[in-house]
Amino acid sequence: MDNYIEGNKAAWEEAFDKRDASWGADIPDRISNEEYAFFNDETKALLKTIDTEGKVIGQYCCNNGRELMALVKSGKAAKGIGFDIAENQVAFANEKAKELNLPCEFVAANVYDIDDTYKDCFDIVLITIGALCWFDDLNRFFEVVAKCMKPRALIIINEQHPCTNMLTTPGEELYDPDHRLECHYSYFQHEWTGNGGMYYMTLKSYESKTFTDYTHPMSEIISGMCNNGIVVTGLQEFEHDLSGGFTELDNSGYPLSMIIQGKKS
Image 1 (cartoon, rainbow, N blue to C red):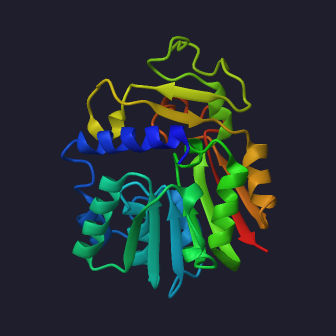
Image 2 (image 1 turned 90 degrees about the vertical axis):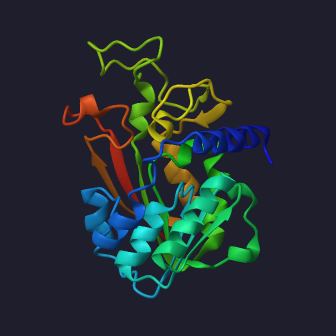
């Protein structure tokens, strides 16, 4: 396993161990009572147009599994398989799937290491906010994703827009609350490391194990897909934030999030 991925595994497992009691507590109720729970309006509208009934759905970097379980339940899918590097999060997701009696399986794995066990497995692949940044090589990432997709399988990516890579967020040295739209960083790939923890999960600040992530321009995302036989069939861009880091910039005319659709040729 790549050294930075080993480090991220340890940091994510630490964050989950420190999670606030509220983190994931709403999963059973919301999935039982809401249609397509945990999806934003644009992604929900798109998913409703896709025939997921009886299909096998895969998700990479599935976190606590809530999105995959919601899609399997609302879309009447035959099965959902989610991958995440944090073993404790995967165990939690499997517990919730069992509690909800959903045909979902969650697997602790480094995506780069997923073998032919899942070759030609998925009818639909889901990738959501905060997944792509954990991989240094998107061509290598999409090679694995494409391997696991059936011919003509669909992929939906709902992610942070690459243009946000140029902006600062609260807590960074260059952050200026009066000039939020100033671009301080390169649009092109660079590596980030940090020990500030995962506040959205823990609701507290702590000195964490080291997280390492990578920013990617749109060209790397699109090329990674196309180089591995995934044809881009749609792109939507939005001026509202999904990450929680740029909500003050909503509706300011700056691209903050996106949906990319594709199909394996």
